[in-house]
Image 1 (cartoon, rainbow, N blue to C red):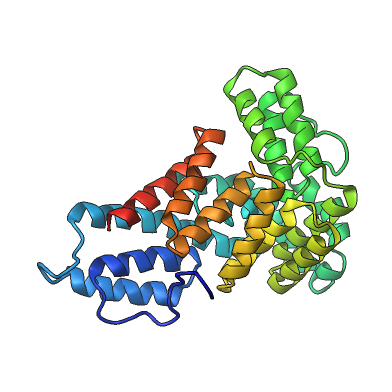
Image 2: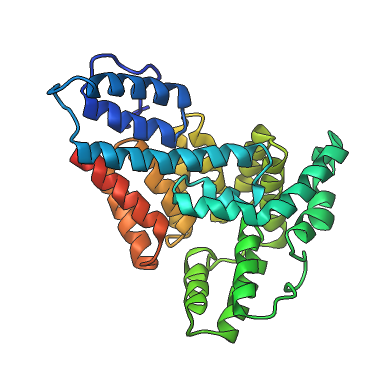
Length: 329
């Protein structure tokens, strides 16, 4: 892979503790659990020996443990996404930067998850063949979302929450309508400001066609039934059919990182950012790739852009903490 500093498939022996610490962060972000655990074992062996070359300070070890705890929790939750348990959070968890407190929000979709699990258990193999029907008639209603028109929301907060759920389903047009309704009802409040930021960082200027949105929903549907190869294929089909829609590039990049296709993912996210420079989702994938490949200056630049777009963005702050930690090692 030309020009990339890629974590090795086999964890090297004889590195300093700080080098194993960096590898642990990089492996868990791909994620490659076997290599992560091996690097952790080597690091623990070194930390048990006093005054070894390249040893971490106690403060560095504490910060590393915190960062690994957050990232491990996020990646474990991502595994649940891919096993059809937490589909509604797939778009967020693909970035692997959720703070640990944010993970608790998964419990808020417990009932929809139970409904969906029952639906899929009943349908079995027919689920993949009838996914359009499942999503239109069962999935979105289970999440409290109509396929057409605005949800039955009563205030700005409910419209904002519905907009976020539409984003997770790949329905950008419906999400945009909800965020605009939120602004109409309460522009000056914190939720109104959040809706304004969402319109800037989640909704591209170029509108997706209904056909493109349907294809993007197909990607999410295939994730729902743990058909990852199908999700990759659907994203590639969407990219070919709708080359000006950033979402297919971003979703495909996030999907193939786990298979170590970092060179292709890097190219894909570059295209996504050319099409939609302010995309939070694409910027987070950009940072993830850059940290994995130790391009920390690029990761910092993307994180700075995220914070300028949304000064309260907690995922951006988590990124910055990890970048600062890796630079200090």
